[in-house]
Length: 103
Image (cartoon, rainbow, N blue to C red; front, top):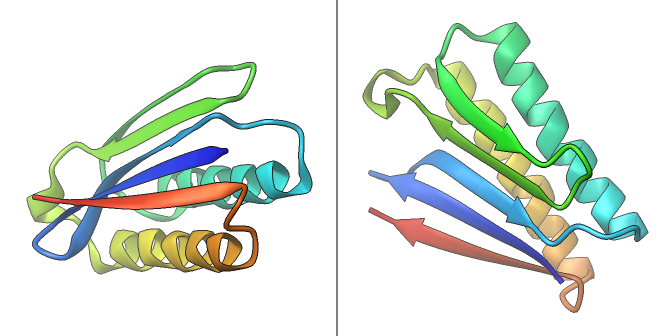
């Protein structure tokens, strides 16, 4: 099962972790959503972040370096990713689980 942890502070996403990827179509969809979000943040915003991942798949963690100065653009990109992930969870609840951690 794919495990996604979304960290929120004051209602806004400040980071996320995705673990236990496999080779299913759901894993491919989750990978595409997550990697597209990270790449979009890198190319389309000036926000600073930390990202660590396993090159063989199966793990990625992302966190904003300074959440208090996050732009609206990054908030929209992260919420769009969350929307896609929750849609996948609703359709494939046996393959993906999302937990939100509120600070």
